[in-house]
Length: 215
Image 1 (cartoon, rainbow, N blue to C red):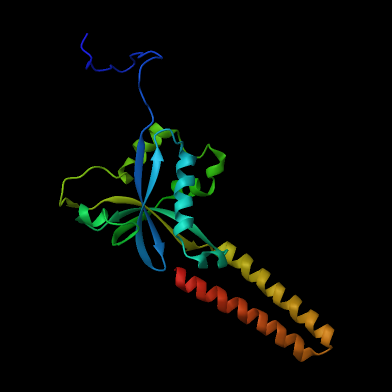
Image 2: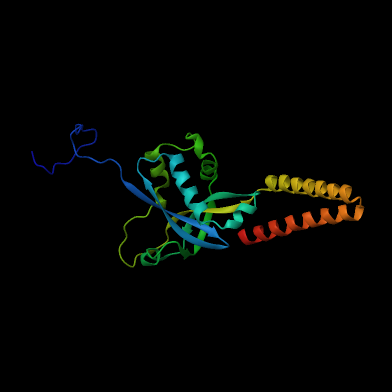
């Protein structure tokens, strides 16, 4: 038997065969950072399940996102399927992250839900199905000077109206409580209104600036 014979599908190679079924896959991830798009790469294993993949994507996203994101509890990460502007492959093999242009992106409800529910381990299918469905995000070998559009996963913060309403309500109640407490302590209505206005102003200024920078 030739030592270079092919292994047919379903062929039992036996426990002593030197076969490593685990391979490494790299996906393109775009993070919107202060209004600009930056390309990252996330290293995956062929044995990763769907939730494992989403957890790695989220970890890379959190590592890359601005610290301002911690001050906006009413903005949540959304996932999009993005198409990069056509550039030579050499432009994307420089030191990452690198600045890129995005031609178009489409919201993915399935991937966004998976990002939020990654701990359940039932949101997405096992690796073979997942890699087949979303394999167009993978980094593949290309010829030099190959200039084409390439797909990537895009994660960016979006405003959640319900969370914003809850936040504004809590901020208003906190401002009222601070104003009432200050007014009672100083026995002054003016002091109460002053503290109320100061707290509301600081919260509004900080949140407004952070939201403006992140949008």
